[in-house]
Image (cartoon, rainbow, N blue to C red; front, top):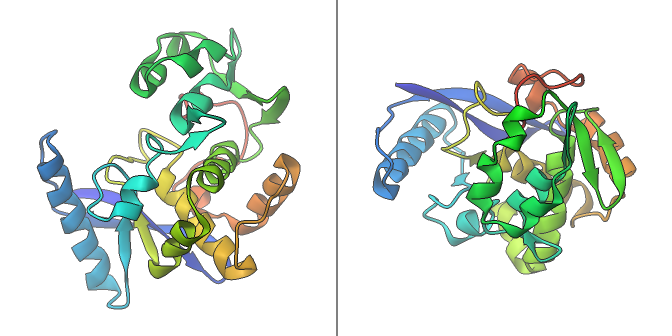
Length: 229
């Protein structure tokens, strides 16, 4: 058995809940998809009105795969590369050269683990503090969705009400594409579109509307002892 979160909108907030389900070990796509199906069964057992969507390259739904951080692009670079290249640490960073390597190499670069605690982010010559531990990633993710997907494709998110990422383990990582998609779902409910917030506007909105980090035990601020993923 394993536990993973699902992300959803409740009372005007993006929230999450952990579900226990049967885990299928192995690295193959088929094994991952078996685990996804098992997780979604657990969600449906708790809520018969659930319409879960896996948000990753392991998704069986085209929109779920399109929403993977390894598929989305921001300013011609993959979202994963942009995020990793923006990290600022106590002893180094940011590392803009990470924009030009394969996404998996960027994520595994040794400097991201050997430069001390994460202290913030730098993107387009602007500094983003660790005000909310997921706000910067969510900001980048939503910006990449706006650049990468059509309005009709973004609208498909509204057909689902639970979002999962089978690779995301809150005991090991902080940021999650499934959580960011639940924020998009909330924005579509509230505005009927993705608003073009500035970084400051998004952080203020995020503070008021995103609570899933709290439910997973993620502190709202402070220097990160573990690296943001």
